[in-house]
Image (cartoon, rainbow, N blue to C red; front, top):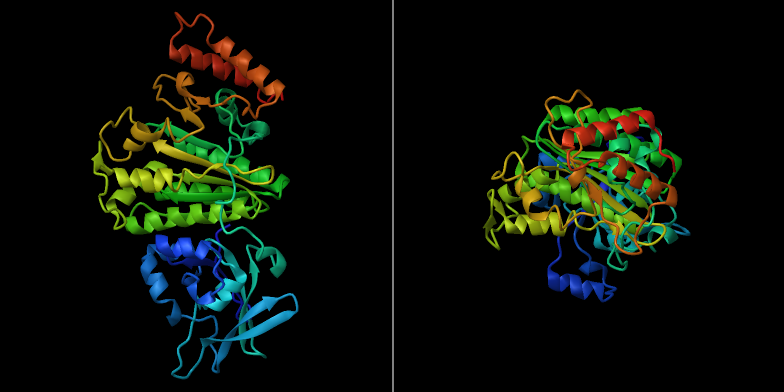
Length: 448
């Protein structure tokens, strides 16, 4: 759920934010340096809503001004070990002139915990010993476990999905229509592409609900919802789904349309970095993102865009496609039996706004950056449900030997495709869609 600080005797929950290392520093650090002072600057933010008020660089620069402790006296940072808390020489806060770390985590502490941007940390204040220490990382309290976690996915090979993400199992009409044509696998990059007002948000709300339900059944599934959108009321819909699924495992992060473009990029970047970190620790992470196309447009308008590589149609920098699609949203995949990163996002269709900045994402990258696509169309004469699937352009890729479907699922999909394409030479798309809807009404639950 939306994480906020909780103060009970000074305790707090926050997220880790880190300063970017240079390419040279990364290479040197990856060799295996044992010098804590070479660890990247690491700070704690209370909530990603801070991105809407402060730039990333401001949060990094001003973290020392804020502390967990609001009492007189000198407090030091401690380290949680198997034998208890060990106090360091690094000051957390003091009333004197000495330099303090505040909510910047001292290098020696960050190094010992092997903290990575996106980690959620629990902080405890021991007033008797005057020590502040991190008591948990991503909910894990055993130092032997969280110190052994991989820092990212660089040590794993991404593969096509090995298992299905059964969002259609709860009988939702629209999800059943969609997945009969293009099922979703754990590790998919799955885009819902449509013109404005065709039901992208409608579908994503239902997908969020189904994924949170799945997380109740499987503790290894974790759901992250990122929202960089046009309408503030859309965020209310997503939050309502979280409230309905209180026992689900997930969280929501947002940057509204009227926030600074840098803030929108910061939220998107944080969501994906946290998702990759949680995947590396051994989870099936599902990221639902609204909207991918708007985030790319925000990057072009932000200070992160340098204009390298020139501009493509619609006023988007090619660098924005590289940074946001290839490097950020392109890190999906199945990483063995126990971990996967699934990215399900909405993208504005190029069909109705061919030259706008947001539709450029569809034009330039939808075929090359996805393992599955659900393309929606507007059919004004069709009664609700809103969702009208373009059957011809809704599909999931199944390379040789990489088909996650069961035999029963393959059989049902083959039957449905044959049914809706019967007499295809004379049957218009609307009629094919009506046939598909009719089948789902008669068969609301999967046969597999």
